[in-house]
Each structure stands twice: as C-alpha cells, then as structure tokens.
Length: 149
Image (cartoon, rainbow, N blue to C red; front, side):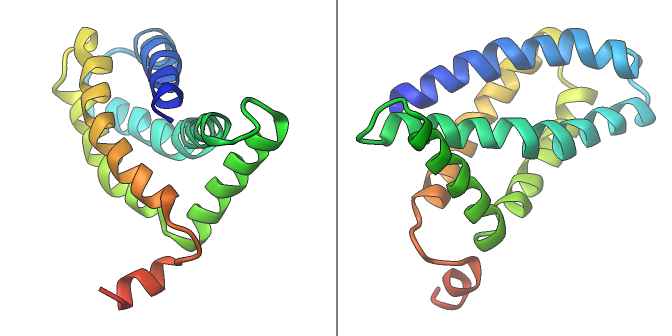
C-alpha cells in the first residue's frame, strides 16, 4: 500500500502536476495572478483533474498495490469501483472539495510557481491520511457514519 502511494505521489503529484501547474495551466489560462485566472485554475483542477484523473488514479494504485492479485486488470477495476462507491456513498467529492478548493486558491494566488508542487505534496500527505480512512471504510455509507457518531 505504501509503495502504491509512493509511486502515485512520484508519478502523478511529482511529475504530472508539475507539468500541469507550470506548463499547461499558464498556457491555457495565462500566467497573471488575477482573480479570474486563479478561479479558472481552481475550477479546472477541482472539477476536471481531481474527480476525473487524480482520485481515480489514486484508487487504482491503491487497488493494484493492496490486492492479493498484484498489478492486474481486476485489481484496477476494484480500485475504480471503490472510487465510485466512495463518491456516491461516502461523500468523497464533498470532502475533496472542502479541502482542495481553499488549498488551490492558496496554491495559485500565494505560493510561488516553483513551490506549488511541494506545497500540494505537503497538503496531499494529510489528504492521503483522510483518503485512506475513507477508502478503508467497508459498507458504511456517509449517512450511517454521521448518525453513529
């Protein structure tokens, strides 16, 4: 499991997000620090890249590295299905947005471009602790978890 998160962190957070934040976002949205540009970056990151790329890949890595089958198509499918389940039954995206929308506003407005991936990686450490707790829950929808507390 740790190897999966390490590889995910290195490949997605380290390499892809660096390219996304330092090359693609400036090309797509401009490099000025206006409220409009920052909002476009936050919206793209939280409505496109997070739910459609970041989270499914994280769940696929976890599925592949925690499965007894090892890296297999079945393990990847399990990870993706677990992601879908957590989105619909455990309010995963609401928690994701509650953390990452404010963090990304800070990332794109205050953090210098060359420190953005480092800052995101630091916050990701704490996010992964929460994500691990969410994804480890078996058969306990968010409503049941809230009422049993």
